[in-house]
Image (cartoon, rainbow, N blue to C red):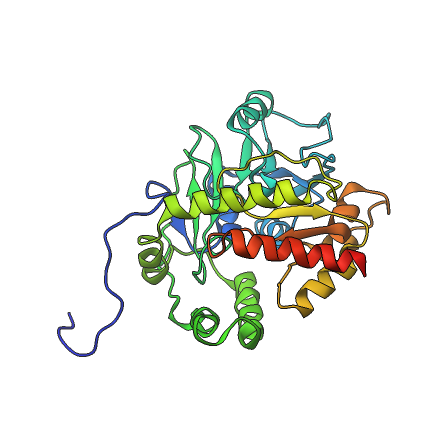
Amino acid sequence: MEIGGYYGFEQHEDNSYHRNAIKLNSGRNCLRALIRNRQIKRIYLPYYICDAVIEACHLEDCQIVFYFIGQDFRPQSEFTGFDLSIDYLYLVNYAGFLTVEEVLDYQKAYQNIILDNTQAFFMKQIPDVDMIYSCRKFFGVPDGAYLYTSAKIIEQYEKDYSYDRMGHILGRYELGAEKFYAAYAQNEEKFSSMSIRHMSDLTDNMMRVIDYGRSMVQRSCNYSLLYRKLLKWNQLTLPEQVNGAFSYPLLVNDAERIRRKLIEEKIFIPQYWREVLDRRLPEDAIECQYTNNIIWLPCDQRYGEVEMNYIVDRIGRIRKL
């Protein structure tokens, strides 16, 4: 026991949004834990997904069967070879567009499903559905993930530590994102070698004090504004409202030029899952089109109407050049 000395972070009461979930150190390790404890031997994954999920399956010697998605981000395949006795369907809730009713329909049809909610933090737990959430994709924390499962976790995991992964977060707060992007990228690379551990006390403590109600409302409002203002340009058919939206996906033919110009104006736009292009898919596949031509616009709780209108104005100016 240490008493006295300099001050550290205050210990906060638990106000976590997913306080009843199992708390682990990353989303990919939630999947690894599921594969181990459910003894999953074969899993159906979408082609439109990051390498981290594929690597997690490989690390656990789990066979992968890939499937295509449709324009609505839902599975396009019929899964004719799906064996209800052994197979699992990995269902990605892209941008939080899936409804609870749809998830329940997939559960009824395929029984064994894993719902990837790393882009849908605010979807509540659905009974008897394995669900994975990411902390750092929605909030300013270095790591952390939540797992809902009825599977009995028989392994004993050590506690993770996050003190040495905070540099890019603290640096951005005081000096801006550009100066610390390299540190952020280095932190992302660390996840590939992380063993399965429980969420660190530091990340857990930071997640306890977030104003989740305000965050959810602000994200929803920002998404709705972008939806209204960009509807005339967007080639995607999107829902008008998304509860606690992850991001606003804008599909346009000149995405690379717009993305580059926005970044030049310090509107930082990620290009998700470029590794999809290395999977030898047909050039006209939805997965390739979405990887190349979707601009994932930020609409999170850090911003409001002013910033959303600024983004819309910048896009309008770029498209006229």
